[in-house]
Length: 450
Image (cartoon, rainbow, N blue to C red; front, side, top):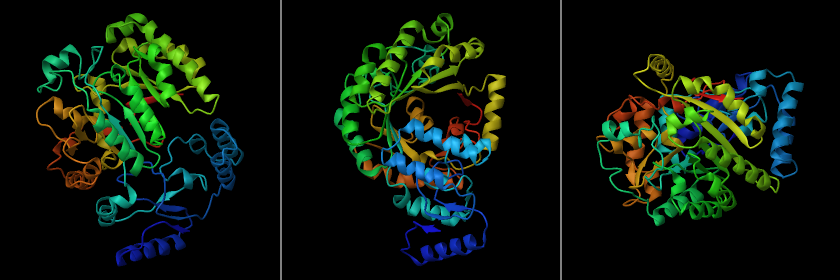
């Protein structure tokens, strides 16, 4: 049994005593870490009690890995082999998500979450949020609002979006987030976040920002472990190598379709050029990884129409020899209310995911005007009617925004599922992204190809 819970007040000691009594009488492994819903992954524990299904071999593997005595790929293979040898169920052998933290999963493959009262949860996640979530796990920066494509499904740059959906002047002029503000955010993440990531995901194409290389190098200098970019891939043939050398270690490329005809209908540009860039980036990544690097790529294919859906098999076949670097390939369904099948999927997901959203504890994103939001739905409000945000980096310190009264209210409303100031959360069309079920799917709307 282990306690990592601060015992500063009488109620803290009473809570720890309650856990001890229940754990002592239980035959199962119990753990507790404050989190808004069951599906949220955590990197640590507050309390745990280990009773059964021990896997000390996995702990030894982790010890070797932490001492740089075995490479990452071998570490994963050994974990899988040992679980198979122990006859552990397939769903645990292939487990992708460690809700109870990897630390605990390496002690045992089976854990039960310790259930607490709503009052206790609010105390830990609102009043004591600094104890458990001192900094964000993921921060996204939109440093530019410029794009070189006009994809038909894009809510930002498609002709339909420009004429029907956008009610503000967000894209009235080309805009860049000021350089010093980008550095302020990176400084905050480097100081307060543990195992955090920074993503350059513009409200446009991030590779069009000529400062991107410098931003990536600065993030690396701050020892931010995960530095990612999400791109349409049109410029990676020219810029990919330089990005990786600067410190980029995660790249997501959106490629919708496996044939030139389908791709051009959706994105209006040359598929061969993008694919050539992906292959070159894989070669760059292989060379860097051979010398101790940790670069991973992934592809995302939006299932825009039936043509794309029918090309899934061809899509996977096309990239099968690059899967050592392209770790994940995702097929993302659209949440569209005017398409019968997809609307039904969306409604089914929303009906079964009535839990608090993870995003107010996970991180935030900053747009080109400095507005800070916790998700795409909130950020997109700046394109439509009323801007909803939790702060602005041009008139507030990043630390103060993360710990602001607005963020406190957002967390409280989400935990209670009672919305007032943040009523936008009540009918959120992105809610499905906040939950990952036990089979590793984002509620059947985003599927990962094996």
